[in-house]
Amino acid sequence: MSDEKLPSQSENFSEWYNQIVQRAELADYAPVRGCMVVRPYGWALWENIQSALDRRFKATGHVNAAFPLLIPMSFLQKEKEHVEGFSPELAVVTHGGGEELEEPLVVRPTSETIIGSMYSKWVKSYRDLPILINQWGNVVRWEMRTRLFLRTLEFYWQEGHTAHATADEALEETIRMLNIYTDFALNEAAVPVIPGRKSQAEKFAGAVNSYTIEAMMRDTRALQSGTSHFLGQNFAKAFEIRYLDPSNELQYAWTTSWGLSTRFIGAIIMTHGDDQGLILPPRLAPIQLVIVPIFRDDAEKSQVMPVVERLKNELSAFRLKVDDRENLTPGYKFNDWEMRGVPLRIEIGPKDVQKGTVALARRDRPGKAGKAFVSQENLAAQIADLLVDIHASMLARATAYRDANIHDPQDYEELKAVVANGWAFSWWCGNPACEAKVKEETKATTRCIPLEQPGGSGPCIVCGEQATEKVYFARAY
Image (tube, rainbow, N blue to C red; front, side, top):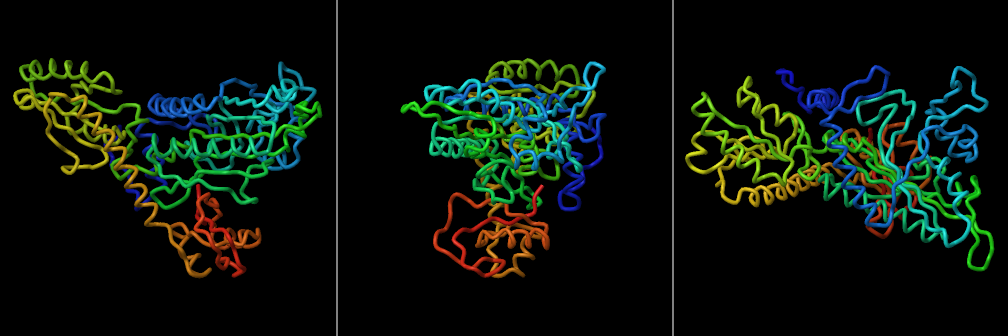
């Protein structure tokens, strides 16, 4: 770790983010432009995200499978809106085994097409439905402007793909998965997301409707953190996913897709981090607590280390690290683990050994406010309670920050001022021209039409026409 101080969020949020990702050893730049290497600390965080989501998917009847990385170009061309939406981002393989391929292959940007072709083989009768499959994998999208985790050429994610007998079932699935993402964000990551529907201009290419969870970062920008798409029969018709219904009539299936990626790591970093570095939510943190032994000589070491070893065994239910590096000062170690965002630090010195206590330092409350001396008795239960409290306080802080930066402007001029440094929650008539005007003049986009609406109606913030829905406008990553 470099001894240099991190840039502060207020002076350069973008540079703060870039440096913290590298200095906390979450990821590094790969030799290929726009690609990243996810380092072990970052991958451990992603594994914990995977585990929390996978548990939820399986509890709702979904199963995991794996589909090919390479997709025939003709597959993407079957769904017109889909290929138009993705064509600028495609990586295409034209040669293999030293020869030109008969048909170019696309490195998957998403898997609706390859999975749709398989579902057309597997689905024959209404008894074959629903199909509820998820895959964990990587995809490639040829982005021009990249940033670690937030937007890279290759990224890791899960993508769910389901097929149903009716539109109602497919729509119910779309919302169910959106709710799972919302639950995960709140209860695992302490990220207070807002679930809602995307506008037609912002929806997934090939979807009837797209739904999203939107989060506010510490610079007030929005981050789309997970999406769930109702695909209607668009892909079923493109790939002939048909089944015989109970009346023996041939029907097209209704499909959905939904995904959450390593971009969510960026959401965690930028929702919770401060000028000292990361603040990781306890339920996802690779290391939940670090023990720092403090001693000046071998005599003190012989007193402290047996207690450290005993506590390490007593606290084995937690993801725990003992920092026994002897070439570094305790102060350096404190700063290092603070920068890496470990939720709780335990300090044990000779005086603590004599008193039967330990010092506990919370990462979410830096300095004296987050430090307490507690008994070594029943320490595991005390720590379990403390981690629950840390999660709650992180969620409360992030929610308060978000709500303080959402405004209800009274007219279009005020909206323009608001979205320069916050979110606007405004009536919108639904006209794409009004949406395009805001984007062109402010760089803010419609983030989502929240599922929870205030009811009633009001004048569109752009044109003044009567509107029945409110939408969030914000600049976004």
